[in-house]
Length: 163
Image (cartoon, rainbow, N blue to C red; front, side):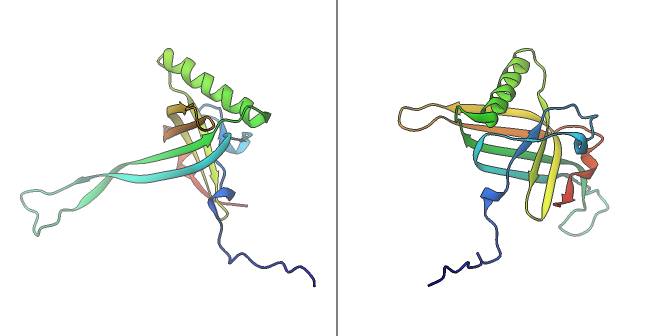
């Protein structure tokens, strides 16, 4: 009997969405950069939100107030496993060392983050805001990191169609 190649149902799973990083300043066009994956990630996600304020005055009517957007936030989080091998490890180690060296010098580590989903790609200039590593005795060493959007002339084109 021949082996059948069955369709997967048309969806996609999170494992096809990498978290990629390029170390560069905010005045560099991200289209010119070479992005690298951030290690062996088990979770990667982003949150985009509008910062808002209410505009109720003494002449407003009704129970609801007009709300206006005053800014925006964009945060990227990732959790992964530290594996001591390959170019992913070398890049991860370089990024982590830079983060802690900059933290000690009170300098922000800025990078471009790219998350290419099958339909849309998100590319944002960010500050690396947190990094933690867990090395308990019963499992592999894991890490978590987070990034928050920082000012860049190229952040006005965050979303593009994935080629």
